[in-house]
Amino acid sequence: MSTETVMWVAVIVGVMVVVPAVGFFLLRRRRDRLRERFGPEYERTVAAAGDRRAAERELRARRTRSGPLDIQPLDPESRRGYADRWAAVQERFVNEPGPAVSEADLLVRAVMAKRGYSTEDFAQQASDLSLRHSRTLEHYRQAHEISGRAAGSWVSIQELRQAMTHYHALFDDLIGGDQRPLRARAAARAPLTRPHGTAGPRR
Picture 1: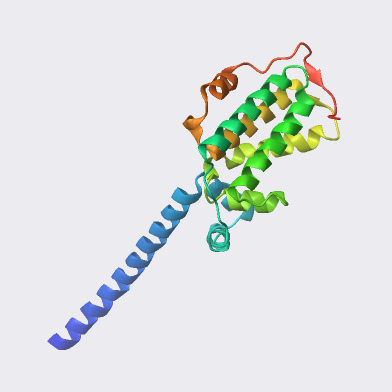
Picture 2 (picture 1 turned 120 degrees about the horizontal axis):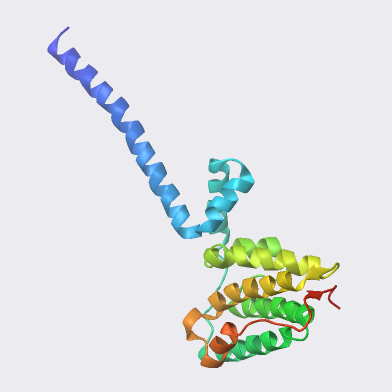
């Protein structure tokens, strides 16, 4: 075998080794970016799809669909107003847990609408929120599930309390976290209690 032939064989073998390695590196890098962007929503989407590549295609499609969204931050006055309304909802929970959970749901959607998110369809809400609030989106899913059951059947006071906690996690994220007024922070730390231990369907 000539020297030239040996060199060409070495080049081909090198390419066969390097190309897959580079492809694997790029795949891992793109996957890591998706994980970083979507947080817990990445694993949830993978589990729901049953196929990692299909789930990643869905997440990339969400990112593409988000282009027309015009998400705006809240101004300080709006932030204070929403925080005060949340504090009032938490106070109402003590004596009227069912209606308070319904009001919490409406308030969260009001903040979403104010910032520019869709509020008509829950699936679309979840898709849009996953792009900027992926770390609190699961809270919203759980709150929505409990709220839906409470609308037509008996649920325990503990479940309603959990729904309020879940709603609060997303609400806090939407309005800007630690920029809440002190009154709202104090209310958030207050225990959600009620004289009775259970609650029936919400009216």
